[in-house]
Image 1 (cartoon, rainbow, N blue to C red):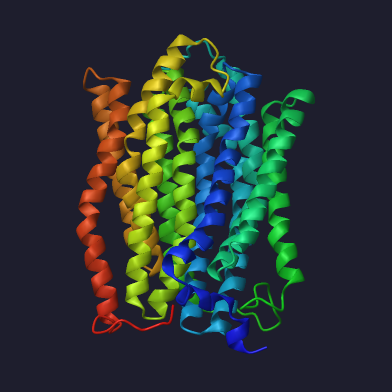
Image 2 (image 1 turned 90 degrees about the vertical axis):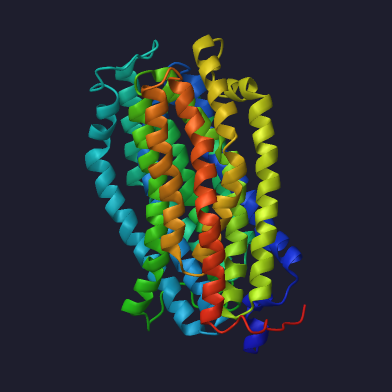
Amino acid sequence: MSDAENLQSTKLGTTPIGKLIFKMSGPAILSMLVQALYNIVDSIFIGNYDPTNGVLALSYALPMQLLVNAFAIGIAVGTGSLISRLLGEGRKDDASLSSQTGILLSLIVSALFAILGYFISEAFIRAYTLDASTLNTGGANMQTVYEMSYKYLSICTCCSFGMMIEIMLNRILQAMGNMIVPMISQLVGAVTNIVLDPIFISVIGLGAIGAAIATVTGQIIAMFIPIFVIIAGRKKWDIHIFFTRGFKLKKQIIFNILRVGLPTVVMNSIGSVMYMIANIILNRSTDAVWSFGIYFKLQSFAFMPVFGLNQGCIPIMGYNYGARNRKRFDKTFRLAMLIAFIYMTFAMILFLTIPKPLLQLFGVGDNIARIKMGSEALRICSVAFLPAAFGVIMIAMFNSVGHGIKAMFISLLRQICLLLPLGYILSTYTSLSFTGFWMSFPIAEALSVIIFIPITISTINKIFRIKGMDAEYVRISR
């Protein structure tokens, strides 16, 4: 079989853009919708198992979970971005070595988090719960919240290897244009978690421990899907994904993975830091912490599909950047913006119109205080979805061309530099109180997009000028 026949990734440079985005992003969007369900199913079952304490316990554990997820995604994004560019340049051997290096990095990071989770989970949760002296508990039993939270977190961090390897392998497959296997992997993991949650939580009566066991079991089973597929079809892949006899670490490959990967880790860790500090700001009231936890879970249904769109578009933009085809690059970028904006508009309308039914999923019952605050949080925060649609696609573009630092700065600006100061000032020094905190979300998103629009345009023009692509588009048959 010739290289041309074997190289599945060449479709990234030949298939019409609209069809290619649909083909590449469709399975990823479905996968991320499934992942969004994965993210909230524990909270739904725990919330109904213990309406007063359950969701609150998981809300305090979430920042550390986000940090683990940030490292898993960051290293995988750096590896996938590098593989896409190397395939676009025809460098299959280096792409193979990049895949193997990425897998090794994921194994190392998962081991480090196992150690970290074992030793600090309890102290981390205690700081928010038993040691919080100014907390208005709103009827919650903080001893119960503390025990549920740290036990859940300990299991999830110590057994994070399943998620780490699953995300890495799926990103590698996506970099070669295969979106189906990652979709199946996430679907199987989510279904496993959904099936096991009620069994472990309610039937066996393990509560939060059962939720954690169901979560990591789903992640491990999801990990085996791409492993089996890669081994079974090893002759058809563009590169050698798993370790070979000739494997050796190369500083340049590690550097190129981390050049995009570390900023992506930082970018996703910003979400963890933001959530952690937000909990501190809101920790005057468990109702506010509960409301923010529910919003953060539900907003994944808005953001996860757009992240799925990113997963489909990053290989397309990365390949065509490497292949020196600006016309296809620009068209992909513009169309992704439009799709993201339409979807986010629909999500915002749902949050604005049916907040109470959404809250009822988590066992809020007739708790008037939580219903009132939660509904306000969902309505106000969801306005941020519209500017966020553009910001998220900008991040994808920067990652696709290896400018991970700029992608990091967008997230840093919107979630740390703007959101938290605004949230603290408006909620503490004005009569708005917690309403002011919710208002900081759309304000921060809008300002960050306004600031980065000229930077984005300048970056695209510059990178193609450097490669000598501005004079004439590369002609590729459609």
